[in-house]
Image 1 (cartoon, rainbow, N blue to C red):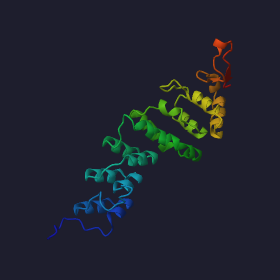
Image 2: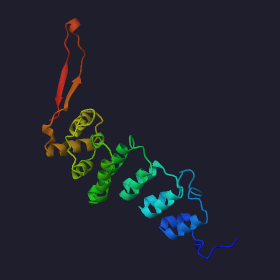
Image 3: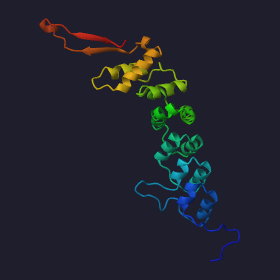
Image 4: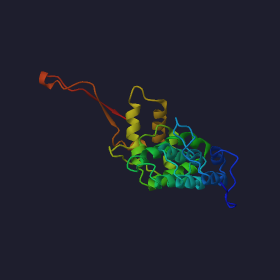
Length: 235
């Protein structure tokens, strides 16, 4: 079969290597010769050529591969979010990679939850940008605030400009959630550190839901007894 003089030269590297290197021209050549972007990759992990393109934050290749039939996985969205690749994340969300009614809140938490190590190194810019983008797309920050269990995560929320007194749908603030966790026998050192930090931030004065009622007995009024309640104030 004759080859057009305008046809690209056949690449001397596999598609996988071309994508990992960010070699757009080699990828285009592979596509010209009919290489399937969903074939020949790790079938157990169900990965295709899109995976390294997303991991590298290569929007040009992501667009090229999606336009040529690359399938998407929700894990690719997480990869883009945690990697701080907002432009790639936006492209994947626009392409329908995640159900916005249930996936964005968890995605937001993955970024915030992973910020504890990053904050200590001061490399928060990408994470902050991703979080602001996700909140702009409808992620509900109130549903993830109470999950913060490290001081670094709380600081990250503050860096985002989040009001730590914000209440979730259950009416709890972060302070309420921390008080509840530290009252448990198996409470972690991290929870107590968060509680101390919140006290330093003046949140201990907000005892809204922090009154813990520990019921130690049951009402025995019918038998002349009394109900014994201990009020443990998180002060």
